[in-house]
Length: 150
Image 1 (cartoon, one colour):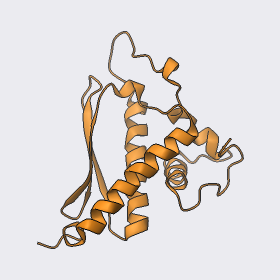
Image 2: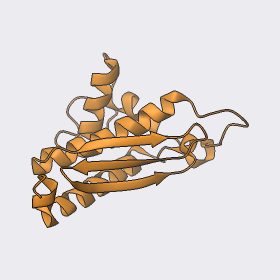
Image 3: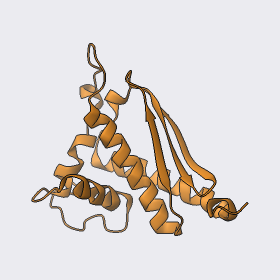
Image 4: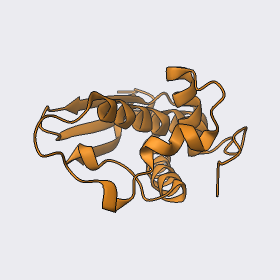
């Protein structure tokens, strides 16, 4: 399985950026890459919504780290800074956008965030790489807007 041993297994890709973000946020000393990514790997059968109450703030944090890693990977590939903006409601719904200059390179509505997760590390990598590729493509299509030119 990808990432069981840790190290630079994902160097240069989305997962490498995500692991880097998790390590910066909480240290991650002594943990393998797989252990750091484990909170985002939640099989569908275990993604049940709680009976009552708001989603755990930890879930919001993981969503923020995921999208910040997407923005950082886009920036690494294009040289254009991408800033994530996350707006979450206590009921588990929200919106995330990534802005590069004056260009919105990602806009997603998040529903039922308690279920935010992926079936496997491979599915996580695929989803992140797809979002990065879409952002890079938009920046390449509209470079002046992405660089903030009027």
